[in-house]
Length: 264
Image 1 (tube, rainbow, N blue to C red):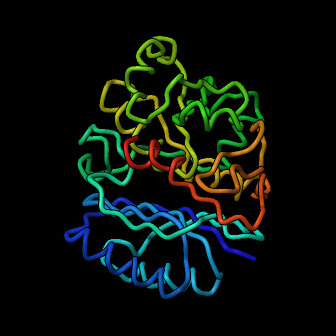
Image 2: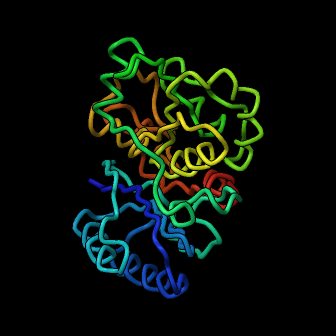
């Protein structure tokens, strides 16, 4: 079996190129394939390969200052879903183009809700513990949403993450009396989105800690319809983290990843 991991962490990286070069060497020696982005604000990676090799690389990566608490979402497949290894240095680990919408600039993360708590809110009729209505806000693009999302979620007609602020504007008034839970695949986009929204007057916004994949890992698919689009040849994962496609094709996710990771 192939072990797959999606992980990111916001932390100051003084020498992004040095970390990228080190990761390229480590992943190459372990036979890992996938995409790794390194930026002054942290790391973002999607990797797959032999379980022992992958876990070894992650353990060594946590030895870098600031990456000790790197959180990972794991799943398995029978085949390798990536065709090659790509390690790149970027301005952001997920492009949003709002420089204050990062925990490094804000000095803290946006408040988060953990998956078990959210599942309880959804099970009790979509109300939080204070009785406020819960609105799930999908920060992903339309291609991803097409494979599945939370039932009744607010989805936006965007093709890139950078389009979110403008697309959200018409909904601000309708959301003011709700508890808004921002979510995405693994947590990185909803983390930036939640910070941006709170900085722009929406103090009722939380982020779903760990994103959809973290939700699937911890509570399964309660309140979720369909699968979660992923950035490789598996296409999507169901709430049991099983791939929609699992063929030994070594899929190349370059075209899929480019608009999401490289330019938002």
